[in-house]
Amino acid sequence: MTDTPTAAQPNVVIIGAGPAGLTAAYMLSKRGVAATVLEADSVVGGISRTAVRDGWRFDIGGHRFFTKVRPVEELWFEILGPDEFLRRPRLSRVYYRGKFYDYPISPMNALRNLGPVEAVRCVASYLWVRIHPPKDKSTLEGFVAGRFGWRLYRHFFKTQSEKVWGVPCTEIQADWGAQRIKNLSLFRAVWEALKPKRLRMRRHKSKQVTSLIEEFNYPRYGPGQMWERCTELVTAKGTKVMFDSRVTKVHHHGGRAVAVTAAHDGPETRYECTHVISSMPISGLLRAMDPPVPHDVQAAADGLRYRDFITVALVVPEELGFPDNWIYINDPTVQVGRIQNFGRWSPYLVKDGRTCLGLEFFVNEGDEMWTKPDADLIEQAKRELERIGLVEASDVESGYVVRMPKAYPMYDVTYKENVDTLRRWLDANAPNVYPVGRNGMHKYNNQDHSMYTAMLSVENIFGASHDTWSVNVEAEYHEEKQAETEGTEPRG
Ligand SMILES: Cc1cc2nc3c(=O)[nH]c(=O)nc-3n(C[C@H](O)[C@H](O)[C@H](O)COP(=O)(O)OP(=O)(O)OC[C@H]3O[C@@H](n4cnc5c(N)ncnc54)[C@H](O)[C@@H]3O)c2cc1C
Image 1 (cartoon, helix red, strand yellow):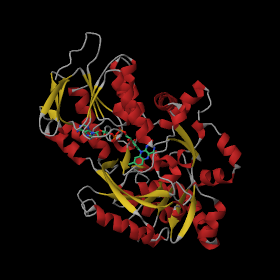
Image 2 (cartoon, helix red, strand yellow):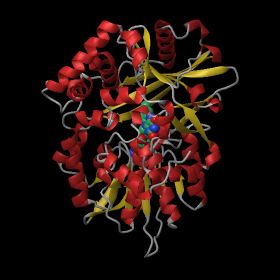
Image 3 (cartoon, helix red, strand yellow):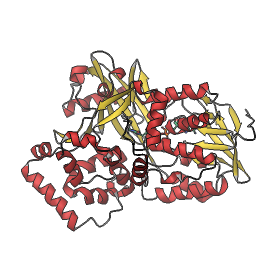
Image 4 (cartoon, helix red, strand yellow):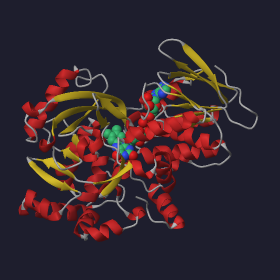
Protein backbone atom coordinates (compact mmCIF):
# COMPACT_ATOMS: atom_id res chain seq x y z
CA MET A 1 0.00 0.00 0.00
CA THR A 2 1.50 3.33 -0.99
CA ASP A 3 0.21 6.74 -0.11
CA THR A 4 1.69 9.43 -2.30
CA PRO A 5 2.52 12.49 -0.22
CA THR A 6 2.11 15.97 -1.60
CA ALA A 7 5.38 17.89 -1.88
CA ALA A 8 4.58 19.96 1.21
CA GLN A 9 3.14 17.20 3.34
CA PRO A 10 5.08 14.53 5.19
CA ASN A 11 3.88 10.96 4.80
CA VAL A 12 4.15 9.66 8.33
CA VAL A 13 3.91 6.08 9.57
CA ILE A 14 3.31 5.82 13.31
CA ILE A 15 4.17 2.59 15.11
CA GLY A 16 1.85 1.85 18.05
CA ALA A 17 -1.60 3.16 19.03
CA GLY A 18 -0.77 3.85 22.67
CA PRO A 19 -0.72 7.35 24.19
CA ALA A 20 2.45 8.39 22.35
CA GLY A 21 1.45 7.06 18.92
CA LEU A 22 -2.09 8.43 19.07
CA THR A 23 -0.88 11.79 20.37
CA ALA A 24 1.43 12.00 17.37
CA ALA A 25 -1.49 11.13 15.07
CA TYR A 26 -3.65 13.79 16.74
CA MET A 27 -1.02 16.52 16.51
CA LEU A 28 -0.39 15.65 12.86
CA SER A 29 -4.11 15.74 12.11
CA LYS A 30 -4.25 19.26 13.58
CA ARG A 31 -1.71 20.21 10.93
CA GLY A 32 -3.79 18.58 8.20
CA VAL A 33 -1.65 15.45 7.94
CA ALA A 34 -3.44 12.09 7.88
CA ALA A 35 -0.95 9.49 9.09
CA THR A 36 -0.98 5.70 9.10
CA VAL A 37 -0.92 4.12 12.57
CA LEU A 38 0.20 0.48 12.72
CA GLU A 39 -0.85 -1.28 15.93
CA ALA A 40 0.14 -4.86 16.75
CA ASP A 41 -2.80 -5.39 19.11
CA SER A 42 -6.53 -5.31 18.46
CA VAL A 43 -7.22 -2.44 20.89
CA VAL A 44 -5.88 1.09 21.41
CA GLY A 45 -4.24 2.56 24.50
CA GLY A 46 -1.21 0.30 24.90
CA ILE A 47 -0.38 0.04 28.60
CA SER A 48 -2.92 2.84 29.18
CA ARG A 49 -5.80 0.81 27.74
CA THR A 50 -8.90 -0.09 29.69
CA ALA A 51 -9.47 -3.83 29.55
CA VAL A 52 -13.13 -4.88 29.30
CA ARG A 53 -14.32 -8.32 30.45
CA ASP A 54 -18.02 -9.20 30.80
CA GLY A 55 -18.79 -5.50 31.23
CA TRP A 56 -16.15 -4.90 33.95
CA ARG A 57 -13.57 -2.30 33.03
CA PHE A 58 -10.09 -2.15 34.56
CA ASP A 59 -6.71 -0.54 34.00
CA ILE A 60 -3.30 -2.10 33.63
CA GLY A 61 -2.32 -0.80 37.06
CA GLY A 62 -4.26 2.36 37.75
CA HIS A 63 -3.75 5.43 35.59
CA ARG A 64 -3.89 8.80 37.28
CA PHE A 65 -4.12 11.75 34.91
CA PHE A 66 -1.80 14.13 36.65
CA THR A 67 0.80 16.25 34.93
CA LYS A 68 2.90 19.34 35.34
CA VAL A 69 3.21 19.66 31.55
CA ARG A 70 0.56 22.19 30.65
CA PRO A 71 0.26 21.40 26.90
CA VAL A 72 -0.43 17.76 27.81
CA GLU A 73 -3.11 18.71 30.32
CA GLU A 74 -4.73 20.92 27.71
CA LEU A 75 -4.66 18.11 25.19
CA TRP A 76 -6.35 15.69 27.61
CA PHE A 77 -9.25 18.12 28.05
CA GLU A 78 -9.35 18.96 24.35
CA ILE A 79 -9.62 15.30 23.34
CA LEU A 80 -12.02 14.06 25.98
CA GLY A 81 -13.87 17.19 27.04
CA PRO A 82 -14.09 18.33 30.68
CA ASP A 83 -17.38 16.53 31.39
CA GLU A 84 -15.84 13.11 30.92
CA PHE A 85 -13.24 13.64 33.66
CA LEU A 86 -13.95 12.75 37.25
CA ARG A 87 -11.98 14.45 40.00
CA ARG A 88 -10.97 11.63 42.34
CA PRO A 89 -9.64 11.85 45.88
CA ARG A 90 -6.52 9.79 46.37
CA LEU A 91 -6.34 7.34 49.23
CA SER A 92 -3.57 4.78 49.35
CA ARG A 93 -1.85 2.78 52.05
CA VAL A 94 1.00 0.34 52.51
CA TYR A 95 0.37 -3.10 54.01
CA TYR A 96 3.39 -4.16 56.03
CA ARG A 97 3.76 -6.80 58.75
CA GLY A 98 0.01 -7.12 59.24
CA LYS A 99 -0.62 -3.36 59.52
CA PHE A 100 -1.80 -0.63 57.17
CA TYR A 101 0.36 2.49 56.94
CA ASP A 102 -0.99 5.69 55.44
CA TYR A 103 0.72 6.68 52.20
CA PRO A 104 1.57 9.56 51.84
CA ILE A 105 3.00 9.25 55.31
CA SER A 106 1.03 10.45 58.33
CA PRO A 107 3.40 10.84 61.28
CA MET A 108 0.88 9.77 63.96
CA ASN A 109 -0.20 6.71 62.00
CA ALA A 110 3.42 5.71 61.33
CA LEU A 111 4.32 6.21 64.98
CA ARG A 112 1.36 4.12 66.13
CA ASN A 113 2.18 1.28 63.75
CA LEU A 114 5.95 1.22 64.17
CA GLY A 115 5.89 1.83 67.93
CA PRO A 116 7.93 4.56 69.63
CA VAL A 117 11.16 2.52 69.87
CA GLU A 118 11.28 1.67 66.16
CA ALA A 119 10.20 5.21 65.25
CA VAL A 120 13.16 6.63 67.17
CA ARG A 121 15.46 4.10 65.48
CA CYS A 122 14.16 5.23 62.06
CA VAL A 123 14.82 8.87 62.85
CA ALA A 124 18.31 8.00 64.18
CA SER A 125 18.99 6.00 61.02
CA TYR A 126 17.88 8.99 58.92
CA LEU A 127 20.21 11.32 60.85
CA TRP A 128 23.01 8.77 60.45
CA VAL A 129 22.82 8.85 56.65
CA ARG A 130 22.88 12.65 56.73
CA ILE A 131 26.36 12.36 58.25
CA HIS A 132 27.42 9.07 56.65
CA PRO A 133 25.76 8.87 53.22
CA PRO A 134 25.70 5.45 51.51
CA LYS A 135 28.94 4.79 49.63
CA ASP A 136 27.29 3.92 46.33
CA LYS A 137 24.47 6.31 45.53
CA SER A 138 24.33 5.22 41.90
CA THR A 139 22.06 2.27 42.77
CA LEU A 140 18.41 2.39 43.83
CA GLU A 141 19.41 1.11 47.28
CA GLY A 142 21.98 3.86 47.84
CA PHE A 143 19.65 6.52 46.45
CA VAL A 144 16.66 5.65 48.67
CA ALA A 145 18.67 4.87 51.81
CA GLY A 146 20.47 8.20 51.33
CA ARG A 147 17.16 10.07 51.33
CA PHE A 148 15.21 8.18 53.98
CA GLY A 149 17.75 6.25 56.09
CA TRP A 150 18.49 2.54 56.06
CA ARG A 151 15.69 1.44 58.38
CA LEU A 152 12.89 3.15 56.45
CA TYR A 153 14.43 1.89 53.22
CA ARG A 154 14.27 -1.68 54.52
CA HIS A 155 10.74 -1.31 55.94
CA PHE A 156 9.08 0.42 53.01
CA PHE A 157 11.12 0.37 49.81
CA LYS A 158 13.25 -2.75 49.56
CA THR A 159 10.56 -5.45 49.37
CA GLN A 160 8.27 -3.40 47.13
CA SER A 161 11.03 -2.42 44.69
CA GLU A 162 12.42 -5.95 44.55
CA LYS A 163 8.92 -7.26 43.78
CA VAL A 164 8.62 -4.76 40.94
CA TRP A 165 12.04 -5.53 39.44
CA GLY A 166 12.66 -9.14 40.45
CA VAL A 167 16.31 -8.31 41.23
CA PRO A 168 18.07 -6.77 44.27
CA CYS A 169 17.87 -2.97 44.57
CA THR A 170 21.65 -2.88 44.16
CA GLU A 171 21.13 -3.98 40.52
CA ILE A 172 18.74 -1.16 39.67
CA GLN A 173 20.10 2.26 38.86
CA ALA A 174 19.31 5.34 40.94
CA ASP A 175 17.73 6.98 37.85
CA TRP A 176 14.56 5.01 38.48
CA GLY A 177 14.33 6.31 42.04
CA ALA A 178 15.15 9.81 40.83
CA GLN A 179 12.36 9.71 38.23
CA ARG A 180 9.84 8.09 40.51
CA ILE A 181 10.49 9.83 43.79
CA LYS A 182 11.69 13.09 42.20
CA ASN A 183 11.98 15.79 44.86
CA LEU A 184 10.64 13.81 47.82
CA SER A 185 12.75 13.35 50.95
CA LEU A 186 11.82 12.19 54.45
CA PHE A 187 11.89 15.76 55.67
CA ARG A 188 9.58 16.93 52.88
CA ALA A 189 7.20 13.98 53.28
CA VAL A 190 6.77 14.70 57.00
CA TRP A 191 6.55 18.45 56.41
CA GLU A 192 3.81 17.98 53.78
CA ALA A 193 1.93 15.66 56.12
CA LEU A 194 2.03 18.16 58.98
CA LYS A 195 0.73 21.09 56.91
CA PRO A 196 -3.03 21.77 56.95
CA LYS A 197 -4.76 20.11 53.97
CA ARG A 198 -6.01 23.51 52.79
CA LEU A 199 -2.44 24.73 52.29
CA ARG A 200 -1.32 21.51 50.64
CA MET A 201 -4.15 21.70 48.09
CA ARG A 202 -3.53 25.39 47.33
CA ARG A 203 0.06 24.81 46.32
CA HIS A 204 0.73 25.39 42.63
CA LYS A 205 0.91 22.14 40.71
CA SER A 206 4.49 22.76 39.60
CA LYS A 207 5.55 22.74 43.26
CA GLN A 208 3.64 19.61 44.29
CA VAL A 209 5.52 16.38 44.83
CA THR A 210 4.01 13.98 42.28
CA SER A 211 4.09 10.96 44.61
CA LEU A 212 2.10 12.92 47.24
CA ILE A 213 -0.75 14.39 45.18
CA GLU A 214 -4.12 14.15 46.91
CA GLU A 215 -6.51 14.44 43.98
CA PHE A 216 -6.27 13.51 40.36
CA ASN A 217 -8.32 13.47 37.17
CA TYR A 218 -9.60 10.21 35.79
CA PRO A 219 -11.76 9.56 32.73
CA ARG A 220 -15.21 8.26 33.65
CA TYR A 221 -14.63 4.95 31.82
CA GLY A 222 -10.91 4.61 32.50
CA PRO A 223 -7.81 5.73 30.60
CA GLY A 224 -8.77 3.70 27.52
CA GLN A 225 -11.69 6.10 27.00
CA MET A 226 -9.16 8.85 26.20
CA TRP A 227 -7.47 6.74 23.54
CA GLU A 228 -10.71 5.38 22.08
CA ARG A 229 -11.93 8.97 21.67
CA CYS A 230 -8.62 10.09 20.21
CA THR A 231 -8.86 7.26 17.66
CA GLU A 232 -12.35 8.44 16.65
CA LEU A 233 -11.09 12.01 16.20
CA VAL A 234 -8.04 11.15 14.10
CA THR A 235 -9.93 8.60 12.03
CA ALA A 236 -12.56 11.24 11.24
CA LYS A 237 -9.73 13.37 9.81
CA GLY A 238 -8.47 10.63 7.53
CA THR A 239 -5.80 8.91 9.64
CA LYS A 240 -5.82 5.12 9.25
CA VAL A 241 -5.46 3.12 12.45
CA MET A 242 -4.60 -0.43 11.40
CA PHE A 243 -5.08 -3.12 14.06
CA ASP A 244 -3.37 -6.52 14.24
CA SER A 245 -0.54 -4.94 12.26
CA ARG A 246 2.79 -5.82 13.86
CA VAL A 247 5.72 -3.92 12.40
CA THR A 248 8.40 -6.37 11.35
CA LYS A 249 10.71 -4.22 9.20
CA VAL A 250 11.77 -0.62 8.93
CA HIS A 251 13.49 -0.21 5.57
CA HIS A 252 16.28 2.34 5.32
CA HIS A 253 18.29 3.51 2.38
CA GLY A 254 20.74 6.35 1.80
CA GLY A 255 20.70 7.50 5.42
CA ARG A 256 16.91 7.61 5.82
CA ALA A 257 13.98 5.32 6.61
CA VAL A 258 11.93 4.88 3.44
CA ALA A 259 9.22 2.36 4.32
CA VAL A 260 7.75 0.17 7.06
CA THR A 261 6.49 -3.39 6.70
CA ALA A 262 3.79 -4.81 8.95
CA ALA A 263 2.46 -8.36 9.24
CA HIS A 264 -1.29 -8.79 9.47
CA ASP A 265 -1.76 -12.34 10.74
CA GLY A 266 0.61 -13.62 8.06
CA PRO A 267 0.53 -11.47 4.94
CA GLU A 268 2.81 -8.46 4.99
CA THR A 269 2.18 -4.94 3.69
CA ARG A 270 4.79 -2.33 2.91
CA TYR A 271 4.00 1.31 3.71
CA GLU A 272 6.18 3.94 2.02
CA CYS A 273 6.91 6.95 4.19
CA THR A 274 8.92 10.13 4.64
CA HIS A 275 9.00 9.89 8.46
CA VAL A 276 8.48 7.21 11.12
CA ILE A 277 7.30 7.92 14.67
CA SER A 278 7.93 4.81 16.72
CA SER A 279 6.50 3.89 20.13
CA MET A 280 7.33 0.19 19.78
CA PRO A 281 10.13 -0.94 22.14
CA ILE A 282 13.35 0.64 20.87
CA SER A 283 15.09 -2.74 21.10
CA GLY A 284 12.54 -4.23 18.65
CA LEU A 285 12.76 -1.15 16.41
CA LEU A 286 16.51 -1.56 15.92
CA ARG A 287 16.13 -5.31 15.42
CA ALA A 288 13.56 -4.57 12.68
CA MET A 289 15.96 -2.42 10.66
CA ASP A 290 16.41 -3.63 7.10
CA PRO A 291 19.25 -3.94 6.14
CA PRO A 292 20.10 -5.10 9.67
CA VAL A 293 22.12 -3.02 12.13
CA PRO A 294 25.76 -4.02 12.89
CA HIS A 295 26.47 -6.66 15.55
CA ASP A 296 27.39 -4.22 18.34
CA VAL A 297 24.11 -2.33 17.84
CA GLN A 298 22.22 -5.61 17.73
CA ALA A 299 23.90 -6.61 21.02
CA ALA A 300 22.88 -3.29 22.61
CA ALA A 301 19.26 -3.89 21.52
CA ASP A 302 19.38 -7.43 22.92
CA GLY A 303 20.81 -6.08 26.18
CA LEU A 304 17.73 -4.01 27.06
CA ARG A 305 15.56 -5.73 29.65
CA TYR A 306 11.96 -5.32 30.75
CA ARG A 307 9.64 -6.34 33.54
CA ASP A 308 6.24 -7.74 32.66
CA PHE A 309 2.95 -7.47 34.47
CA ILE A 310 -0.18 -9.46 35.30
CA THR A 311 -3.42 -8.09 36.71
CA VAL A 312 -5.87 -10.52 38.26
CA ALA A 313 -9.18 -8.72 38.65
CA LEU A 314 -11.51 -10.24 41.25
CA VAL A 315 -15.17 -9.27 41.55
CA VAL A 316 -16.38 -8.92 45.16
CA PRO A 317 -19.41 -7.39 46.88
CA GLU A 318 -18.90 -3.62 47.13
CA GLU A 319 -19.00 -3.56 50.95
CA LEU A 320 -16.01 -5.92 51.09
CA GLY A 321 -13.83 -3.55 49.05
CA PHE A 322 -11.56 -1.10 50.88
CA PRO A 323 -11.77 2.71 50.80
CA ASP A 324 -8.35 3.15 49.09
CA ASN A 325 -7.74 3.55 45.36
CA TRP A 326 -4.85 1.15 45.88
CA ILE A 327 -2.79 -0.57 48.58
CA TYR A 328 0.92 -1.43 48.24
CA ILE A 329 1.53 -4.93 49.55
CA ASN A 330 4.91 -4.73 51.17
CA ASP A 331 4.84 -8.26 52.49
CA PRO A 332 7.37 -10.84 51.28
CA THR A 333 5.10 -13.81 52.12
CA VAL A 334 2.75 -13.05 49.20
CA GLN A 335 3.59 -12.40 45.55
CA VAL A 336 1.00 -9.70 44.93
CA GLY A 337 2.68 -6.26 44.87
CA ARG A 338 -0.27 -3.87 44.80
CA ILE A 339 -4.07 -4.10 44.87
CA GLN A 340 -6.34 -1.64 43.09
CA ASN A 341 -9.96 -1.09 44.01
CA PHE A 342 -11.36 -0.08 40.63
CA GLY A 343 -14.72 0.96 42.09
CA ARG A 344 -12.81 3.70 43.94
CA TRP A 345 -11.28 4.95 40.69
CA SER A 346 -14.64 5.33 39.01
CA PRO A 347 -18.10 3.94 39.75
CA TYR A 348 -18.51 3.59 35.95
CA LEU A 349 -15.90 0.81 35.86
CA VAL A 350 -17.94 -1.54 38.03
CA LYS A 351 -21.52 -2.75 38.38
CA ASP A 352 -24.13 -1.95 41.05
CA GLY A 353 -23.36 -3.49 44.42
CA ARG A 354 -20.03 -4.95 43.29
CA THR A 355 -16.47 -3.77 42.97
CA CYS A 356 -13.47 -5.19 41.22
CA LEU A 357 -10.09 -5.62 42.96
CA GLY A 358 -7.04 -5.69 40.68
CA LEU A 359 -4.19 -7.75 42.15
CA GLU A 360 -0.91 -6.84 40.46
CA PHE A 361 1.94 -9.28 39.95
CA PHE A 362 5.33 -8.21 38.58
CA VAL A 363 6.74 -11.07 36.51
CA ASN A 364 8.98 -12.00 33.60
CA GLU A 365 7.39 -12.99 30.29
CA GLY A 366 7.57 -16.78 30.00
CA ASP A 367 8.26 -17.44 33.72
CA GLU A 368 6.24 -19.70 35.98
CA MET A 369 3.65 -17.00 36.80
CA TRP A 370 3.31 -15.81 33.18
CA THR A 371 2.61 -19.31 31.90
CA LYS A 372 0.22 -20.36 34.68
CA PRO A 373 -3.31 -21.05 33.48
CA ASP A 374 -5.72 -18.19 34.25
CA ALA A 375 -7.73 -20.38 36.64
CA ASP A 376 -4.59 -21.03 38.75
CA LEU A 377 -3.70 -17.33 38.83
CA ILE A 378 -7.23 -16.51 40.00
CA GLU A 379 -7.00 -19.13 42.77
CA GLN A 380 -3.61 -17.75 43.86
CA ALA A 381 -4.97 -14.18 43.89
CA LYS A 382 -7.94 -15.30 46.03
CA ARG A 383 -5.62 -17.08 48.50
CA GLU A 384 -3.34 -14.06 48.81
CA LEU A 385 -6.28 -11.68 49.29
CA GLU A 386 -7.48 -13.86 52.16
CA ARG A 387 -4.00 -14.20 53.64
CA ILE A 388 -3.63 -10.41 53.85
CA GLY A 389 -6.99 -10.35 55.61
CA LEU A 390 -8.77 -8.17 53.05
CA VAL A 391 -11.46 -10.50 51.63
CA GLU A 392 -12.29 -14.18 52.21
CA ALA A 393 -11.61 -16.32 49.14
CA SER A 394 -15.17 -17.64 49.27
CA ASP A 395 -16.54 -14.09 48.81
CA VAL A 396 -14.89 -13.70 45.39
CA GLU A 397 -17.56 -14.07 42.69
CA SER A 398 -15.45 -14.17 39.52
CA GLY A 399 -12.00 -13.35 38.19
CA TYR A 400 -10.21 -12.21 35.02
CA VAL A 401 -6.56 -12.18 34.00
CA VAL A 402 -4.77 -9.61 31.82
CA ARG A 403 -1.10 -10.07 30.88
CA MET A 404 0.92 -7.03 29.79
CA PRO A 405 4.39 -7.68 28.38
CA LYS A 406 7.09 -5.00 28.73
CA ALA A 407 5.19 -2.92 31.27
CA TYR A 408 8.43 -1.58 32.76
CA PRO A 409 11.63 -0.69 30.90
CA MET A 410 14.39 -1.87 33.22
CA TYR A 411 17.07 0.55 34.44
CA ASP A 412 19.84 -1.97 34.96
CA VAL A 413 23.56 -1.27 35.03
CA THR A 414 23.98 -1.28 31.23
CA TYR A 415 20.71 0.22 30.01
CA LYS A 416 22.04 3.76 29.51
CA GLU A 417 25.00 2.64 27.46
CA ASN A 418 22.77 0.38 25.37
CA VAL A 419 20.22 3.15 24.70
CA ASP A 420 23.04 5.53 23.75
CA THR A 421 24.33 3.01 21.21
CA LEU A 422 20.87 2.68 19.64
CA ARG A 423 20.39 6.46 19.55
CA ARG A 424 23.75 7.02 17.88
CA TRP A 425 22.93 4.48 15.20
CA LEU A 426 19.52 6.03 14.51
CA ASP A 427 20.95 9.57 14.38
CA ALA A 428 23.52 8.50 11.82
CA ASN A 429 21.48 6.10 9.69
CA ALA A 430 17.81 6.99 10.01
CA PRO A 431 17.34 10.47 11.53
CA ASN A 432 13.78 10.58 10.18
CA VAL A 433 12.82 7.84 12.67
CA TYR A 434 11.55 9.46 15.88
CA PRO A 435 11.50 7.20 18.96
CA VAL A 436 8.76 8.35 21.37
CA GLY A 437 7.03 7.27 24.56
CA ARG A 438 7.94 4.77 27.25
CA ASN A 439 9.40 1.61 25.71
CA GLY A 440 9.90 3.61 22.52
CA MET A 441 12.68 5.47 24.34
CA HIS A 442 13.29 2.89 27.09
CA LYS A 443 12.36 5.48 29.69
CA TYR A 444 10.19 5.31 32.77
CA ASN A 445 7.75 7.79 31.22
CA ASN A 446 4.17 8.14 32.37
CA GLN A 447 1.45 9.04 29.88
CA ASP A 448 2.21 12.75 30.09
CA HIS A 449 5.90 12.48 29.24
CA SER A 450 5.19 9.78 26.65
CA MET A 451 2.71 12.14 24.99
CA TYR A 452 5.00 15.13 25.29
CA THR A 453 7.82 13.37 23.42
CA ALA A 454 5.31 12.67 20.63
CA MET A 455 4.12 16.30 20.56
CA LEU A 456 7.69 17.56 20.31
CA SER A 457 8.58 14.99 17.64
CA VAL A 458 5.73 16.22 15.45
CA GLU A 459 7.10 19.77 15.81
CA ASN A 460 10.53 18.44 14.90
CA ILE A 461 9.12 16.97 11.69
CA PHE A 462 8.00 20.49 10.86
CA GLY A 463 11.42 21.98 11.47
CA ALA A 464 11.76 22.46 15.24
CA SER A 465 14.77 21.00 17.03
CA HIS A 466 13.54 19.90 20.44
CA ASP A 467 15.64 17.43 22.39
CA THR A 468 12.99 14.83 23.17
CA TRP A 469 15.48 12.81 25.23
CA SER A 470 15.61 15.54 27.86
CA VAL A 471 11.86 15.21 28.59
CA ASN A 472 11.41 13.78 32.10
CA VAL A 473 15.15 13.79 32.80
CA GLU A 474 15.20 17.46 33.66
CA ALA A 475 11.43 17.45 34.06
CA GLU A 476 11.25 19.53 37.20
CA TYR A 477 13.32 22.26 35.61
CA HIS A 478 11.41 22.38 32.33
CA GLU A 479 7.99 22.04 33.86
CA GLU A 480 8.47 24.59 36.59
CA LYS A 481 9.90 27.03 34.10
CA GLN A 482 6.96 26.50 31.84
CA ALA A 483 4.44 26.93 34.64
CA GLU A 484 6.16 30.13 35.77
CA THR A 485 6.17 31.66 32.31
CA GLU A 486 2.57 30.71 31.64
CA GLY A 487 1.55 31.79 35.14
CA THR A 488 -1.85 30.10 35.08
CA GLU A 489 -3.60 28.01 37.68
CA PRO A 490 -3.92 24.30 37.12
CA ARG A 491 -7.20 23.15 35.65
CA GLY A 492 -9.72 20.70 37.12
C1 LIG B 1 1.39 -0.58 36.33
C2 LIG B 1 1.47 0.73 35.60
C3 LIG B 1 0.83 1.86 36.13
C4 LIG B 1 0.91 3.08 35.45
N1 LIG B 1 0.28 4.17 36.01
C5 LIG B 1 0.28 5.34 35.34
C6 LIG B 1 -0.43 6.47 35.87
O1 LIG B 1 -1.01 6.42 36.97
N2 LIG B 1 -0.44 7.61 35.14
C7 LIG B 1 0.19 7.70 33.93
O2 LIG B 1 0.12 8.75 33.30
N3 LIG B 1 0.90 6.67 33.43
C8 LIG B 1 0.96 5.49 34.10
N4 LIG B 1 1.65 4.42 33.59
C9 LIG B 1 2.47 4.61 32.38
C10 LIG B 1 1.68 4.54 31.08
O3 LIG B 1 1.01 3.31 31.00
C11 LIG B 1 2.65 4.70 29.92
O4 LIG B 1 3.42 5.87 30.10
C12 LIG B 1 2.00 4.85 28.55
O5 LIG B 1 1.05 3.86 28.26
C13 LIG B 1 3.12 4.81 27.51
O6 LIG B 1 2.59 5.12 26.26
P1 LIG B 1 3.32 4.68 24.92
O7 LIG B 1 2.43 5.03 23.82
O8 LIG B 1 4.69 5.19 24.95
O9 LIG B 1 3.51 3.09 25.03
P2 LIG B 1 2.49 1.90 25.17
O10 LIG B 1 1.37 2.25 26.06
O11 LIG B 1 3.35 0.74 25.52
O12 LIG B 1 1.94 1.71 23.68
C14 LIG B 1 2.75 1.21 22.67
C15 LIG B 1 1.89 0.55 21.63
O13 LIG B 1 2.74 0.04 20.59
C16 LIG B 1 2.28 -1.23 20.18
N5 LIG B 1 3.39 -1.98 19.58
C17 LIG B 1 4.45 -2.53 20.20
N6 LIG B 1 5.24 -3.17 19.29
C18 LIG B 1 4.67 -2.99 18.09
C19 LIG B 1 5.01 -3.39 16.76
N7 LIG B 1 6.09 -4.12 16.50
N8 LIG B 1 4.18 -3.03 15.75
C20 LIG B 1 3.07 -2.30 15.99
N9 LIG B 1 2.70 -1.90 17.23
C21 LIG B 1 3.49 -2.23 18.26
C22 LIG B 1 1.76 -1.85 21.47
O14 LIG B 1 0.84 -2.90 21.21
C23 LIG B 1 1.11 -0.64 22.16
O15 LIG B 1 -0.25 -0.51 21.81
C24 LIG B 1 1.62 3.18 34.24
C25 LIG B 1 2.26 2.05 33.71
C26 LIG B 1 2.20 0.84 34.38
C27 LIG B 1 2.90 -0.36 33.83
